[in-house]
Length: 415
Image (cartoon, rainbow, N blue to C red; front, side, top):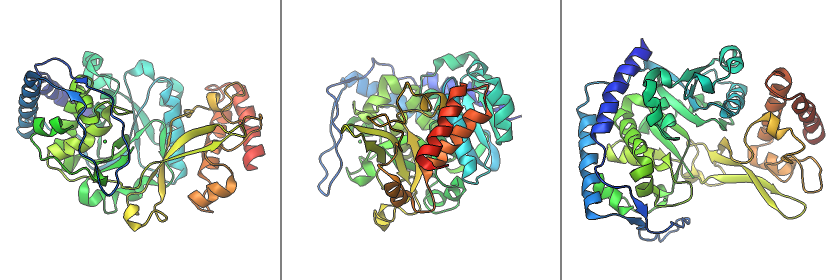
């Protein structure tokens, strides 16, 4: 029944998106925005976007029209009331990354169901979707079964947005395919921050946007640092309006809203759309204040190599003191989570400049234990899962991945 309801919703929603297209040329940047941290004396909000009067008027008119359509909609989001789960977008090479993430989730003890959204069935792998995922309480969901030929309308960030809209869960944790939790995510749904706000974002910074959206311009304080869209907790029951407006920002993101939100800053894309859609819909939201931390090491030749970003729990945030903030998410950025790539002597991922195998999140075991706590070696857990994948799913990976992975765990982690 849900797929039918999702298709009906999309038919109505697509009509609203199309009817509210800004009738103007695309936005351009005046210059690139150099983002710096905010201190006790925040700077004026930067202005790096070129916008003609006709563009401004067209954007404001279209935005107002779409918000009115959202507020007066006749077709609601379809989901299972009271349900919770995890939403991931993957497909192609990222399906392997999603498998690592799902296995890491199960290692934390959570049994929350996982929906892994693909563009279409061709982006799946029958061995993963039909054999492996069901054993892990996960399943592949092709977006094309809801959108049909309209799937071609979506840009690279559109898949994430539509996956959120048509997932079966009332409350969900969205994760990028290469982002996993270090502890069970179940607690995130039951503690303040989420129960009081219904939307939690993590940090990763245009005056014109606020006028277009007809909202008051907030101060440039620590709550205004850039958001990171690799991990988001959403309640559809309390934030349907916000989610629909975020979809509008993403649908017209490449031409208009990504530039209005990020103004050419590094990582321009969907990451700001969730925060500003909550503001535009007057919905509550909470942004974790503890800044993202890069994890990596310095080679013996002096080269810095960062491979992972750590993000912190919203339950014990920066207000409690930086020494108390607890890392909760690990987001891989270089290299990606693929045993064939990681356990490969040609890529050099696991090797120091002198050819020796080593940790890649920290300089040494002592530093890792100090960061994660003496009872939990998160990096070792990740490598164990990837080694086990390479050895268990031998038809998915090259045989050498199992051999090198086993040697790596023995030499570096004695596991």
